[in-house]
Amino acid sequence: MSAAITIKADKLLKQLNLLQRASFNEAAEQALKSFGFESREILSDAMKAEYKHATNYTLKSPRFKQNGLTLTIGINDDPRQNQSAAKYLQPTDRTGGIQRKPIQPTTLSGFIRGRFGTNKVAVPAPDSRAGRLFINAVGNVRGKKVKTLISQLASPSASYKEQYFVVTDRRGGLSPGIWRRYRAKNSVVLAFALLDQKPTQKTSIDIHGLLIKEAQQQLPVLIERKLRRLLS
Image (tube, rainbow, N blue to C red; front, top):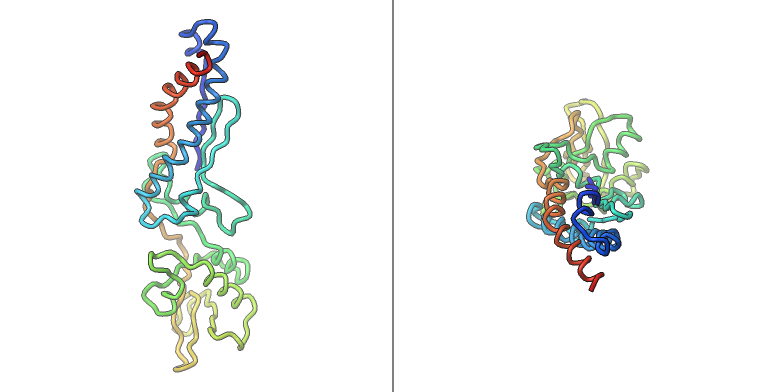
């Protein structure tokens, strides 16, 4: 999820006088830096418009890096995060005209794969009382609840108030999933379904196309402005 913008100076330099040529690279680098900050606002505004409920972390995730006459713009991919913004937003990127993409597997799916040896994807069951506990008011998965669930599945204990267990293949009338056992009536309720295929979702923002379009409109004006300021 990134776009690289490079200023190729050859054609532009032919249109400038000697004094302007001497200052062009400096002006272009300043213009790229200014557009870098502007690009963060451009993406943030697009996220507000396209995502139903964008968190502050998501809105602040656009990043840029400038190296001479090349500007690289992307989404925060901090490896220290449990799941970086770049990873969970990747399925929403429409770059290349892709209309649908598989959802990003959660850390829970990774845990299930490592612990129980299945590649099935864990998806909350929104219609069950156990599943609704893991979904907030805007439909996002509750990270802290999932973290607690992983701890309980990793070290099962009768001392836990909530009891969960995993079924990887259909058995005893139970479909593959993470089930919660209720003590009151000794009943079990599906919390997460384990699916063989990754669910897909609609893409929403053509990040590459949006940034290239804005760069084509704004950079010539910014370069001219920076050049004028350097020569004044």
